Length: 211
Image (cartoon, rainbow, N blue to C red; front, side):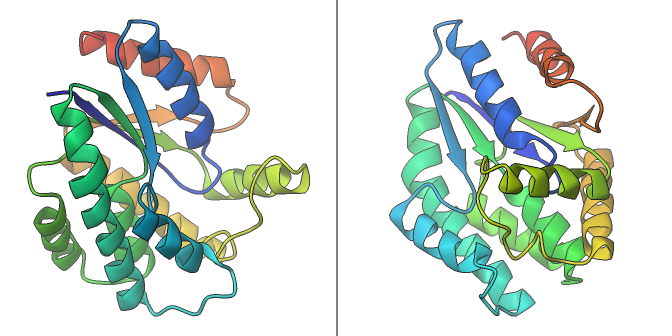
């Protein structure tokens, strides 16, 4: 079996950058790397992603939760499991922890019910390692908006438009998950920490795992 790594964090924490760097780092060792994103990764997932992130979409919390889980079910079945079976290293931009943090802590849905639903959807396909890029939500949002203004990122989505209190609850959720799950490694990604420094810490984590 391969290795399953997920990246989590609030908006603007730098996941995309660090995923790309880690993919290059692992690829140099000769391993086959597959990078994916949630929601997305399948035709169904990409179609639902457009709905979920569209700033003009009006979706209730429960419908939002179920749409994410539907995308995840497709991604696990059609992409993640086959890739792991083939011995690949799969790196995912978000996975089941985001649902607990955003729809549970952020939206206020039943956290234990979300965890049960996650287990039903993913089965034994649980990350071997989760990198939580932790940063202050306000700093992360400023960075995300700055990228948009510079034309380096997509336009503002539904979640980036949420009030700051929502994003603080999400961060608290991620940190709570990190305390509960041994697979989660918390990496300080707050500005002004340099990208190279963050990447170096992630590489150190990988080396401790034998990669």
